[in-house]
Amino acid sequence: MTVRAFISGLGATSLTAEEAAFLRDAEPWGLILFKRNVETPEQLRRLTGACRDVLGRDVPILIDQEGGRVQRLRPPHWPSYPPGADYGRLYQKDRQTGLAAARLGARLIAHDLRAVGIDVDCLPLADVPAPDGDQVIGDRAYGETPEQVAALAGAVAGGLADGGVLPVLKHLPGHGRATADSHASLPVVDADRGTLEAVDFAAFRPLSSLPLGMTAHVVFTAFDALAPATTSVTMVEQVIRGWIGFQGLLMSDDVSMGALSGTIGERTRASIAAGCDVVLHCNGNAAEMTEVAANAPALSGRARERADAALAARRSPDPIDVDAARATFAALMEGRASGEGLVLS
Image 1 (tube, rainbow, N blue to C red):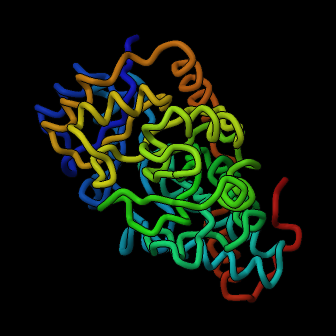
Image 2 (image 1 turned 30 degrees about the vertical axis):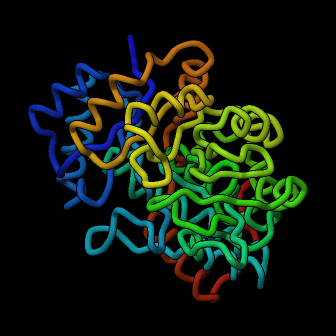
C-alpha cells in the first residue's frame, strides 16, 4: 500500500465529501485533530471512525493533549489536566510523587483519547526553558534542568504507552531557549554548542528510544546559521540523529507555522530533504493540504521502516480502574497522597 509522507489536519467536526476524496487519493500516513474538530465524545468517535473507514486502515490519529494551555479535549466532556510545571513542582518536593503524578495523569489522558479513537498524543515535551525564553513553552515544561525534564517526560511517555497511546517527543532538539513563538516568527538561538549540549539537547538524550518525535522550527546558529532544525540537514543528522541519538519516526512541526518561509510545497520538500520522515500540516486548509500531498513523497526506505516500527509499538491499554485512578491522581496533585509505590518501571 502506498502511503505518503505527511500527516494531515481536517477542517471541521465531520468529513466532507471533498475531504474524504482527498484522503482516499492522497493517502496520508496519519491525521491530526484540533479543537475545531471536537464537539462531543460521540461526534469524535464518528469522525475518527469515518477517517479509518475512508482510508481502509488503522491510520494513526494524533492530537495535542498536554494539559494546561494545550488541551484540545476540554470540559464539560473531558477533564482538565495540569500543565507540566505542576508535575515539576511536585517533583521538587518529592521525586517519587512527581513521577507518579506525571505517569498517572498521562495514563488518564490516554484513557480519554482511546475512548474516542485517538491513538497518538503529541506529548511529552523535553524542552528546557531558559529565563529569557518565549512563554510559548513556559509552564508547559516539566522543570528547569535537563535531568528533571527528562525524568518527568519519561514518566509521561510511560503513562501514555500504558494506556495504548503512542507518545511524540517534542520539540527536537529543544524549544526552551527560543525567544520567539515559532507559530508567528522564526526563533534564532545563539547559544554556544557546549551550552546547548549540556542543557537543551541533554534532556532529549535519555528519551531517544521513543517511537515518534517532532522537530523544532528554531535556528541554532552554533550548528546552522540559516535553517531551522526542521529544514536543516546538519541539525537532523548531527544533532537529532547523531548527538541525541533519536532513531524513531521524525515528523516536522506544523509546516504552516509562521517560522518557516517559502510556499507550503517548498516547506514540505525542504523538511523531507533535511531528514524528516513525514511532514505535519495542521490547519485544515484544503488548498494547502493538496499542496503538501503533491510535494510529499511516498513513504519508503528507512522512513517507512521507522513508521512501521512506530505503529508496531501500538498496544492494547493495560487494565485500569478509571474512577480509582482519578481519585488517586487528584490526591497526588493536592498533596494528599504519596507517590511511593505508584511509579511503574
